[in-house]
Image (tube, rainbow, N blue to C red; front, side, top):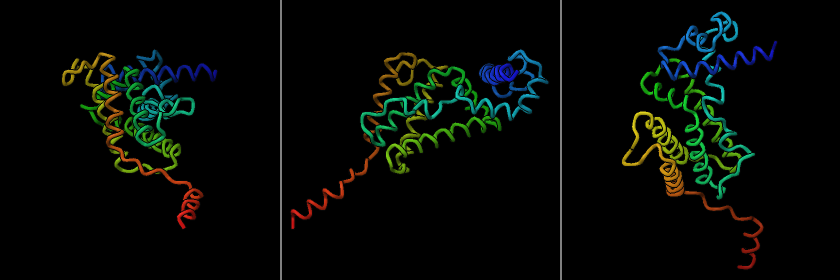
Length: 220
């Protein structure tokens, strides 16, 4: 019985994305979701209560937005250089790859740009929370706090690739670059590396205290 409820709940949550992508936020309702999922509206209300709670369930799922483990999980290789530039570059590249694989998310983001409302705030809150968790995870890896300028660089790069992904739905080219060609996205990945390395000034490496003392004694 529990398994059937979980399967039905998952189907209902998935239906939210399909309705949003097809009809936008104005077309989103309990009735529309119930029809998409093939369930009775009363069952949907019993499982989730109201539309806001259903939206929250959809936003919290990994199908809508990437999880932190998807970008910098322990099971994934880290950057070649264990620096802020290296980690932010890797995170933005994987952010780009994750969004390119989520066709429904792309449609929803396109709607969100022209129809901001109370429901989009829920989706935005999830993205902000995941971004904060991502920064915390990278800080833990490096043992240093994120500088404000580093956050700004990461935000600009992520925003740029997100825009290009969404833009590809209505425009084949951007400044002469084919947005549907894999080679173009490889070029964007290389550009991310160039920007990250050029814009983020890393602090000088810490010197071992014992080595410094020994060096000082040799001078005296």
